[in-house]
Length: 316
Length: 282
Image (cartoon, rainbow over all chains, first blue to last red):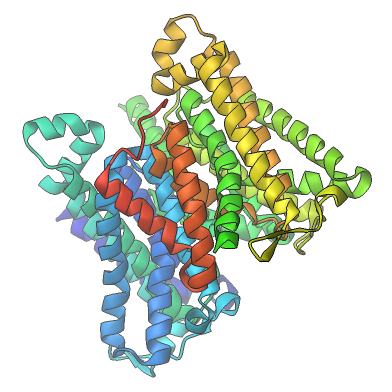
């Protein structure tokens, strides 16, 4: 009950934000931040539940975005079906890949996540007749999507609310899942896969399911990105984006479900503050990743939790 | 057809020289160096700069020396301090390095494509079975064979090679037997990075140099290392040769989807043999 109340308040509070900020530039930035927050939540959830690091979630994000753009432009499917396929296809791909790659252990798995995403990047770049290479695709989206006018999705003020609600729903769903028996089982597998197998659980399918779920969240973010921007380029598949999502998750900390989302917000504040330095943005991301990984392994959410605990001890 | 096979050998050879560095580092430190493609790229650029001043051979030597030094530093300041951490921490740090190095190269050498000419003695073509083939490409195949042969002999017959192989199977036990794994690791990471530099420089006349040039070959070498069996030298060699051929055939016959072929092969191999082709240390 308390959980539902917290998420209801969070959802309502976010929906009121656009009225507080008059600046359209800030709103644009915040909308992008929330879309990235959803992607980072997927990456962080994989770390939290599986103990695995994905260097390739841009692959699922970009796949979702490309399916929306391609299907809408070439009129493959009605838009409702397109949105479903754009989320389901990467999910199924992740489930199958996961079943093959998860037998290998963490190091090889991480290498392969990067390889898979980069292969899709090259595909989008080289298959010019389909994806128009480096120039990308301007999606011809229909006027109405799921009963809402297209402008709802393409104006920062309203899209911020849509994305925020999606983010809150995702976080709510994940927090329910974590508390469920399945959530506990995956944590047990993360801690000691062999023991979980001794007790009699199959371990590959639950792990692949977590990977697929985190891919679905990334694809969802990609779909929102395509609807909002109406434009996709191979950059949505590039490892720079995977790296950004990873930095957000690491900066925010993955112990709390909401950590990566907090990380995304901090990330965008940093990006805003970087100003003229954005030419060297990749180096800043890389540097931040190194510093935070080494010095603050718990991330912001972990540090906050630790501080609160300490204060609690003092006041008690 | 012969030409296609030879081109496949060229790419496979470059891939092997790069992948074997990854296998060496994995054997000692149990981590994967995500920045390995960047070392390849830096090697190509250092070769480019020195070649412009002092000629190709000086460029080759300079590049290997610079990258060997970078490798030693990488072990001293990244791998060694982090050796007791989760491997994920080290991988995150090397991934951060990848982004930093790519940006550094963009700042120093610019975004535009650069080209390097092969040395005069290796320019020109030879006639093979009715068609012509660049001498330089044959030389690259030769260089890859030399590196592969030299490494195998070193691993098989020298004492250090024995330590390296032992450590690939079990670094902890190797350390308990009295092998100074820190010193060994510094040397091995330096060699691995030097090989990446070598691979970068000799591929410079074959491709256009750009800061992101390390990307696709890094991915292919990851696929090689995993398909061959993480930590296996023989496996890496076999996988590099097969993927070199497939990559080249893919580029010729299905250019749009060429990047997918190594992945499909890898998934099939992993379904067939989940641990990769050959056991670690072999």
